[in-house]
Length: 295
Image (cartoon, rainbow, N blue to C red; front, side, top):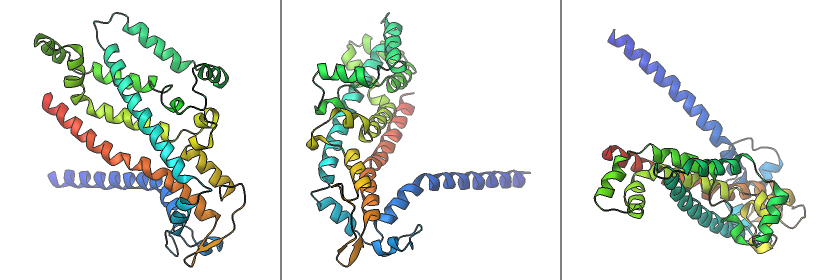
């Protein structure tokens, strides 16, 4: 009986692992495909000999694209990194503090305030009214437009508030008896055991800001304020970033064509945000363990 049950369990695990591997491959396939196109010799690409695995492996296209002043890849990466870092920090701090305040039962008007936040989420003003308001506040062609307006996302606020409401209220009562004020309760008690949710909303904010294209395209006019997504668009559409069709060039005996350039630009834009996930996973595990010990 135990043997049959063991066999069923093993088959379930095999099928489950197979399905998960297939899903993981489907998710990672687009990135691998772009990366393999980028590191392939342009001559094999032009001949249609690269279907998935690379041929003539090299990194010349990355050297070229990062050193070409016409493309401004480094400028776009720097700007996007600054916008993402500043916007994520502002978003996490304001969201966590606001969620803490709205989750306290002693605040009688918390449901009304939460309702107002929800209204701004459901009923958006639209591009033109938003542009007028941003212009009044001086956000047009101002890097702060990537930080201040999105400092509190209602969706992330609801997630954070729900998490904080699930924590034992006895923690706050015990701290209050010991003489702790709200500042100490928030940052010395609730914040350490809230690392999972902080890591989650940090990732959401970072990915959202890094991938922004429409907002900087509308509100940032100066060339020196462009994000990596805007520059990526110009590279993909114009091949050489100068509005001209790129001809195949030779670097160290390696051919670089427009397909190499487009794929390399996509990979460069994707890599920084992908590097966030290992750190997020680490904090997730740490936060869960702390919560388990406290519970």
